Amino acid sequence: MAASAVAAALGRSPRAALSPWTLRVPRAGRGRLLSPAGLGGRPPATLAASSQPSAGGEERYCLDLLRKRDYESFLCALLLPAESRASVLALRAFNVELAQIRDSVTEKTIGLMRIEFWRNAVEDIYQDNPPQQPVAIELWKAVRRQNLTKRWLMNIIDQREKNLDDRAYRDISELETYAENTQSALLYLTLETLGVRDIHADHAASHIGKAQGIVTCLRATPYHASRRKVFLPMDICMLHGISQEDFIRNNEAKKIKDIVFDIASQAHVHLEHARSFKKNVPAKAFPAFLCTVAVADYLHKIQKADFNIFHPSLHQKSTLLPLRLYIRSWKKAY
Image (cartoon, rainbow, N blue to C red; front, side, top):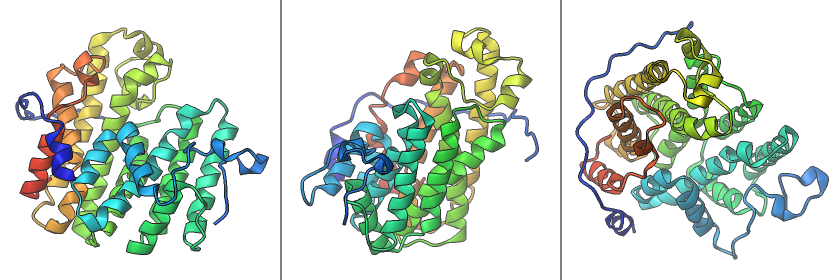
C-alpha cells in the first residue's frame, strides 16, 4: 500500500540541501448518536465530520479525510508499520476534525459546542462507550489497542479551544506552547502506537512538534492574510515595525521578509535540536518523525524564495515529497 502510494506521486528533481541558518529571533522571556451541537438537538449532519461511513468503513473514512485535508500526514501514515497505521490515521483525523472547527464556524459559541463534543467523546472513549462517529470509533479502537495517554488528547482539545479566540500569538513562546500541545502531543501519541516510551524520543518529538507548528503558522499566513487576519507572533512584528495591515496589504516587503526569516529560523533551530538526539533515539521511533521531511522541505523552499511568504512556489504541492518520505523511511532516519 505504501509503495504504490509513493510511486504514484513521483515528479521533479530534488532541490539543493538547506544552507546554514542564523538565528535572529528575539526571545521575550522564555453506542449512541451524538453531535457537536447536541445541546440544541441538531441532526447528525452537524457533526464536525458531516457524513457517516457504512458499517466497518471508519478506517476508510479517516484515510479519505486525511487525503483531502492533511495530505502530508496521509503520506506519513502510509509508511508506518501496519500495527501502528490505523491508530495514527485515527489520531490525525481527530486532529483534522478539531483544526477545521475555527474556519468552519462563524460564531465562537458554535465552535465551543463542537469542541465540547470532542471533549465528551474522548471521555466516553475511555469509558468504552464511544459516540457513533467514524473518527471517534477509530480513536476508541486505537486507545484499546495501544493504551494511549488520555492527557495528550485532552491537551490537543484544550489548545484548539483557546485558538478559537482568533487572535495573534503574543510572542514566539506562545506559538511554541501551542505547537507543543498540539503537534508534539500528536507525536507523543504516535510514539505510543509504535510501542516507544523513551525520554530521548520524547525530547525529539517536542522539538519536532514545535518546528512543525511554527511552519504550519507560516504556511497559513497568506491564506489568513487574504481573510484580513494575521496570527504571527506580535513581539517579532513589533520589533520590525510591521502592523497587521502591512501584512494584509503586503507592504514593507523587506521588513516582512525579516519577520519571516526570524520565525522560520526558530523552526530550523528546533529541527536541528531534534536531530541532535538522533544517536539516543530508538530506531523504532523514527517512523513517527517522518513529518520532518515536509518541515525541512518548506524551510528550504522559503529560503530559496528569499523569505517572501507570498511567493507562488510556496503554494505548490511538492511532487517529490512522497519519494523523499519513502527514502527517509527506508534509511530509518529523520
